[in-house]
Every structure is written in structure tokens, then in C-alpha cells.
Amino acid sequence: MSKDGYELEELLGFGRIFDGTSDETNGEIVSGWLTHELLRIRDRGGKESPLIANPVQVEFARRRQRQNIVVKARQMGLTTWIAGRFFLRTITARGVLTVQVAHTREAAQSIFRMVQRFWECLPEPMRKGCLKRSRANVGQMVFPELDSEFRVLTASDENAGRGLTVQNMHLSEVSRWPGDAAATLAGMRAALIPGGELVLESTPNGAYGCFYEEWLQAEENGVAKHFFPWWMEPAYVSAEVTDLREDELELMEEHGLSYAQLGFRRELLQNYRGLCVQEFAEDAELCFRSTGECCFDMDALEARLKAVEETKGTRHGGRLHIFLPAQPDRKYIVALDPAGGGSDGDYAAVQVIDMESGVQCAELQQRLRPSELTRAAVALAREYSTPGQPALLVVERNNHGHGVLAHLEKGEPYDNIYGSNGVPGWLTTSSSKPVIVNDLDALLGAEPELFRSKRLLEECRTFVTHANGRSGAANGAHDDCVMAFAIAQAVRKELLQRGKRGMRAA
Image (cartoon, rainbow, N blue to C red):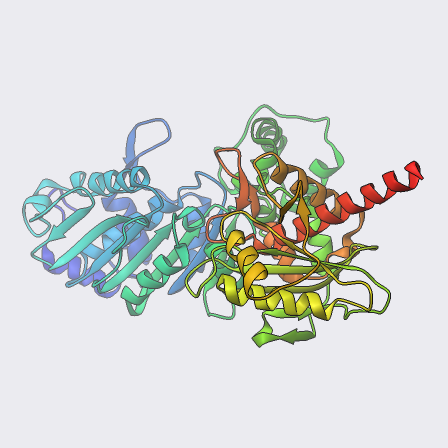
């Protein structure tokens, strides 16, 4: 390359053989050759330098396909590499639209500054000639000579992707996208042309949500999976350690780690604690489930999920699962979380448990209005009532629960309704919720066989502590089955303790 760079026809020629080889590149793949010839970045030391591929970038370039999903540790340089590749694809072809989508506005601005540096460090004749820009707003770069464009968007933009026709698409930190990430992703995918290049990339953020589902389904959807653990980044070293523990010896032997890398790993464990396995991934499965935020013991959850069988007895289109039918001379508790109700609201959930053993007998999860939910709950309560032993119906009276209680009083009467202090229903408060959730976690560890529903256990996975300290469903997940089951077990505990006090008094 001369100091004047390349003319338009030369760039277009490179674009036609972008992932092939050329005599001009001495047999090197054109895209890689252009990367270190044209692109400049600010390195870890703050200096401007050519973009030379690190081990992660080399491996991704080697295994890259048309559609890709990447799970990685933090700060591996992959966003930089993808931005560079897509920038080059944008300036070496006509009529190209490239879109990168970040999880926050700050991240989008950071990506665009990087792309801006790519352009600013090109030879001046190119910048003033064939690659002169007609527009360079924040997040947008237009090259009129090529009729090509590079955009950086944020996932929080309601209209992200709408009305666009995209050739190259990079979706960054998808596991941390706000709002309805699945809907945003679907909209972005609809904008990608057939044969367009797609990269979904993220650090893990729990065994739930849109990105996790995409990772699980990648192979059957024909998407190439890439996993890059932290030790692939050469900069991740520290003072050497030699007094190795058993887990460190296993890692060293399995992955060929150095003493300096293990020293870095000890610092990670000290600084990040429970989030270490998530932020600095070592295993493509463990990195998802070890979030450090889940309110339930992940080992107990995973063990029970592996042991529990698929539900065979279902009704109402699979919404109602029957694990154990009603038995004579048994007492049952039927607890319900009314949620929002309606076709567009959150799910309502009903849990049926055996009073004596606490085992889960039935579970309903469905979007139902208060009147519909009342009829469904009463039907289950009657089904699990035995002669002389009517099932105890427990209604969470928060929010829409008042509507259910009103229907029970006026339109769908039922005789055996739980109440406290003379008021029908169960009240979940900011002080009682952590208690019943912690009790449920303890129950999962002590008696996992009481949990029969895979749907319930999956909800436990996504029941997390939020930044404000409150607990509940992670973004995009549900917790109705968890709360209904927690309430049922809390009422059972209360009744058993009350019975023991009565026995002592006698």
C-alpha cells in the first residue's frame, strides 16, 4: 500500500475476494491482510498501533461461518476484531449496510469511537477521496461513493433494525440487553439479508434468557458456536504460584496453563468471588449457571433438573401438569399466585402439594383473568378434596389476588379458604418474601424429591437478586410457579408448627 492508500476500484477488487487470497497479499487471506495494513486501534497501553490478531481473534477468524454465536470471557478483543472486519466489508463493496448493536448507549459510543478511529487513521487521500463521508453523526457513518453505511445502535432503541436491509450484523452483549431481548433479536434478524453475516456475542449472564436459549439451540439452527475461555488472552497473567491446589493442577494439565496464569486466576477468585466463573469463563456450561445472583443453590438445582422426569400427565394444552393424583385420606394445599392475568399479562400459577409430605402434586401455569383463574383453582381444589378433607385454598391477596377473593365470595364459592388474622388470603410482604424463598431453597437442598416440575426448577434458575436488593424473576423470565410453590410450602410449615403447638398444649 502506498502513502496514498487505495483507489475505489482497488478496494472493490479486494471486496470481491475478501475471504480469499491474492498475489498482492502474498497468499495471505485478503481480509486479514487488509486488517493489519489499514486498521489502527488504541492498545491496552493507550498507544495507537496496527490491529494485529490475538489468539482469540485468530481462532474466531479460522472457525467463523455465516452465522455465529460466541460465549467469551471479558476483554478478549472480539468486538474490536468484528468491528474491524465489518468496517472493511463496508468500504470494499457497494450498497452495504453494516449494523452493530450494543447493550448500552455507553457501549455503543465506545464501539463507534473505535470505528471512527479506523476511518481517521486511513491515508488522507482515501478519506478525502473514495471514502469521503457525507454523514458522520454519532453512531452513523455514510460513504456516498460506495452507497454504503456503518451504524452502531443500542438494544434499547424501540425501532432498532426496523426498516433496514443489513448485510453485516454484530449483536454485542446480548445476555445483557434490556427489555424484551428476544423480540429485539427477532427484529434485528428480520433485517439481515439471506446470506448476510451474523455474530451474536456475549459474556454469560445466567442460565436463562434470550442469549442462553440461542446458545442451547445453536447447533440445531445451523449456527456456529464459539467458546473462548479467559486464558486465551495473553495479557491475563500475574505473579507465579507454585503451591497448587487440586483444581489448579487439573486445569494446568488439561489446558496447559502456566504458573503465571494460575496466579492471575487466584486474583480473579479473590476479586470477583461468585461472579468469577461468569465474568472470566472457563467452561461453556458452568459459566452460565454460576451467576452469583441466583437465590437458589445452583448445584442442587442442576442435580434435581437432571433427575426429574418429563411430565406425562398434562391437560389444558400442556398448561396443567399432574404429577400425583389425589389419594384418599390425604390432605392437600392449593396455592395460587394471581399475577397479572389476561392474554397479555404475566402468568398466573397454581401449585398443589401434599400437606403431610410437601410433595408437589400438580401445577398450573397460564395467562388467566381473575374470574378464569378462580374457576381453575376451585376445580383443582375440588379435585384434590377427599371425603371430609377439603383441600385448603391459599390465595396470594396482593394486587390481582383481591379480584380472585372477590370471585370466591360472590361467584365461585369455596368453603376452605386460608386466612390470617381474620383476613382471607396470604399477604406477601418485603419482609416475608425473602423468608419463604430462603425456606424453599433450604427445602430444595434437603428434600429435592418434593420438586417434581421442570418448569418450576427452570424458574428457580432465573429467580435472582436484583441490583436494588430485591429478589424476583430475571429480566424476561417468570417467577409465578416459584412464588405459588413457596407460598404453599410456607402455609404447610405454619400449619405443621401450629399442630405441634397444639399437641404440646394438650
